[in-house]
Amino acid sequence: MNGIAKPEAMSRRKALALVVLGAVLGLAASSVPVSDAEAQTVGMERRQDRRTGRQDRRQDRRTGRVERREERRQ
Image 1 (tube, helix red, strand yellow):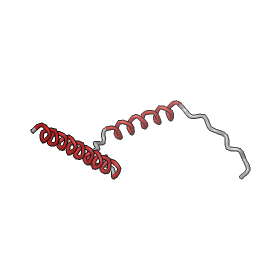
Image 2 (tube, rainbow, N blue to C red):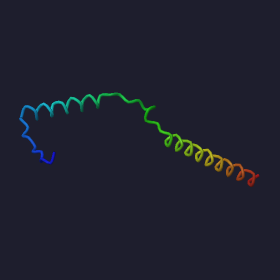
Image 3 (cartoon, helix red, strand yellow):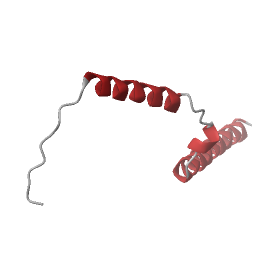
Image 4 (cartoon, rainbow, N blue to C red):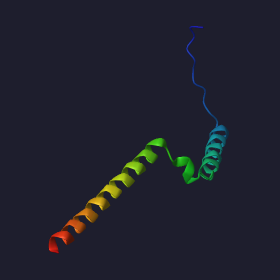
């Protein structure tokens, strides 16, 4: 078991077969459809919730400023 394994030369036919196999697998993998729903992660949902909350709070502040401004002008 202490023998050193020598790499064997690969024939052109085997090399070509490996290249073709890689190309076929690459094309097959790229044509598999993936829906957007599968791409949603828990982190992305949390981020969207935080973003929506910030937008709501921003809109509330703007509305409050407009109302206070109108009260001062009356």
